[in-house]
Length: 189
Image (cartoon, rainbow, N blue to C red; front, side, top):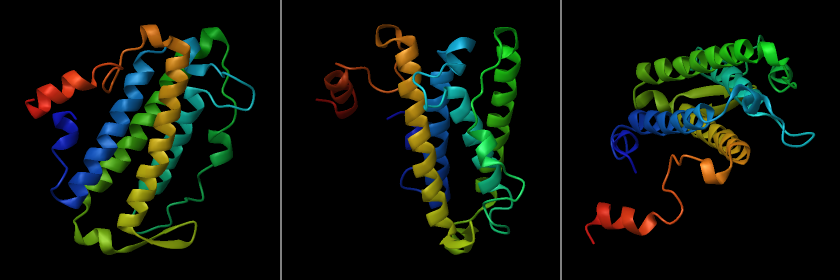
């Protein structure tokens, strides 16, 4: 476990939540960085999503759920989830531009989340928020989003690793075969 992730564990609950989200964002971006533009948009099988589509969907969800988090329903009327999940297949000459647009929205969505978390106190996590008119404590809503984003970040990493190839993949976590060494280093055994 790296210092960035472990710094928030065991402290203020908002810091713990922020730390987990920071790790998820970094995990996805580590995968993005290993993909060329063609791979970013590749669909491995019919009916599946590309990394680009998953990133666009997450960006839309981030902006919707975390804008006015304590005030308005997390499903904003301006959000178009179906459009987020539509096939995204730009012609080769437009891939870099479209990828930059997706990444701009990705960064903007995460900024909304982190700005919102920075404004919250531990007491705010007890307040009630709505998602699609259903009440949740703010804490439960945050955990729901951790669950949602973790699922998609896992998808992004699996898709990216298939495209890049396991033999060329740069591991964000412990590479296969590296657990014993990591445990020796961290646990002093």
